[in-house]
Length: 131
Image (cartoon, rainbow, N blue to C red):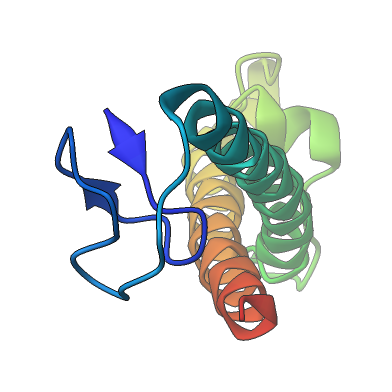
């Protein structure tokens, strides 16, 4: 499979010039060498996507944790009780298990929404940088 060094489109085998942009093509070895940076660019995009998604996951999870529901006395459950969904609450505190589960759901929803938003922002920033 040959790629045009200018527009990176797939060019039919045996073509002397690109059918999309008209750039003259060189030997098959040279066109393969010119196509190699595309895969490294793809890996860079993937790594950048991981970074954006992790940033969004933690930032969204943190915001979701801050916005978690409070008890009737306006107190919020600690992080450990939220993350374990209230599994460590016993005795009188067991009545807060449903609040811990709702708080966990807020935190998880924030993390998922944050991941989606950050991936969208990362995509738009990367798209803007492309020539």
